[in-house]
Amino acid sequence: MAVGQQALGRALDVGRIRVLEDRLGVRETERPAAHGPLLRDVLALHDLYSREGFGVSTVSQVALVLRCSEFRAGELLGTAVVLADLPGGFEALECGLLGVEQSAVVARQLQPLDGPARLQVWSRLQERLLADDTTGVQRTPARLRELLSGWVIEADPAAAVERRRAATQDGDVDYRRRDDGLVDLAAYGLTGPDAHACLARIRASAAPVGLGDDRPASAGSMCWSTCSWGATRCRCRPMTRTRRTTPPSRSGALRPGRGRRAVAGRARRCRAARS
Image (cartoon, rainbow, N blue to C red; front, side):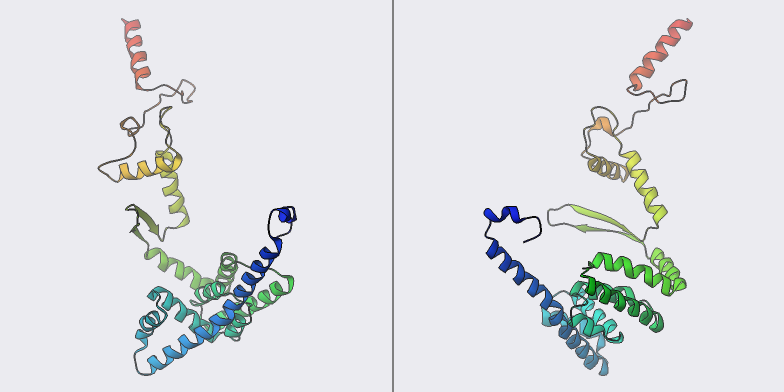
């Protein structure tokens, strides 16, 4: 039981909870030890196929044997190839310094580097992992990715710039149909300034248009995107499709609450006063 939850001891079966928590911890500790031999077998199978010129069949065969997707099979093979080139890579996984998810992060981050740069980053990572193990620090995959991304850039800045340029050229817009019939739209390969410009445009166009606009911010953004892309039907009301213009005051500040009717009434009064 976590520290600070002793007050719940009267209402909970503390003994049973501790047994289950200890069992979960043991099973999580055993996962990396079992994952290491799995990666070794995947790599050995790939070597046998490659000798006969059938290396491209490894991913599909591993997916068939493990009853998993080819994406996961390819990730297992990529992790095994990278760890095999690192001194003590498999041993770090099997002894628990690296978790299952952390090993995949290490492989993805170090794969673009050449030999010397990869060994340099791996050496730094080994020292950090040993220090974390001594102090009891548990580094999540996301935090490990942030740490390695900076080290990878430091190891070879020119290659990092080239990879960024190539990734920008591969940018694309894609969509995925969900099980409930809706569609998720995504944009890939945007630079930071371009992404902020797109988000600023969406926020500006999806701002409330009046007191009657009770849509949440997310619904307003969706209405802006569907209306601007020419969707045949939009969930926003007809009154909210066109933004009303607000005339500035003499000081240049915008006057809240004045729509087209107020402007028309003021124009009629001005014409009547002139006549």
